[in-house]
Length: 184
Image 1 (tube, rainbow, N blue to C red):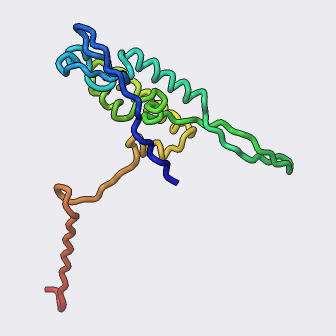
Image 2: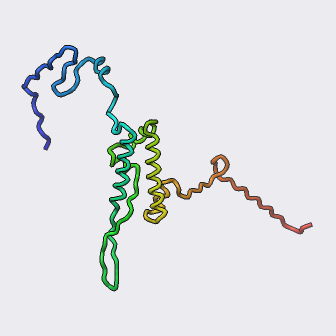
Image 3: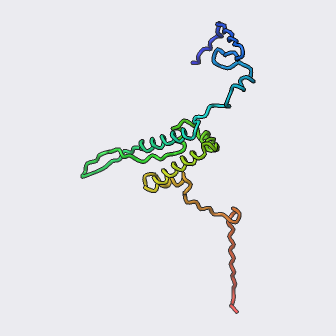
């Protein structure tokens, strides 16, 4: 059942106090001053950055990598020994991912891409991406992670594309010479 709409409030709003030299304050915290003054007072456009320095970003990414290492995935496995079956939890390596890291540090992948383009952060971004890649590659090499999935993720999967010249279709020429009769 839809909620009934409330009728307009009968309470009158008080006008915002005017202090000389400053724009008036909106009763709900919004600015009502003239736009020129607002633009002069504002030091940045948009939402403030999640990380002000590359060191802060590196610290949080390091925390994520430690979290991945200290929080493995758990698998329930059945073991049989002399006719007795028991079920035990077995720790499995958790793969570090860039999307998982972005969730952990509280930013989107789009924001990660913006940090990658910023020269102030690009060195840290490259280092963190290589650390994630190395963790996956090492885990797959040691059979701790599914090698096929990791190879595809890292772009290492065997790919063979069959095509002709300039990416066109493959051309096949079949010449059959048939002759009847005696050979001279």
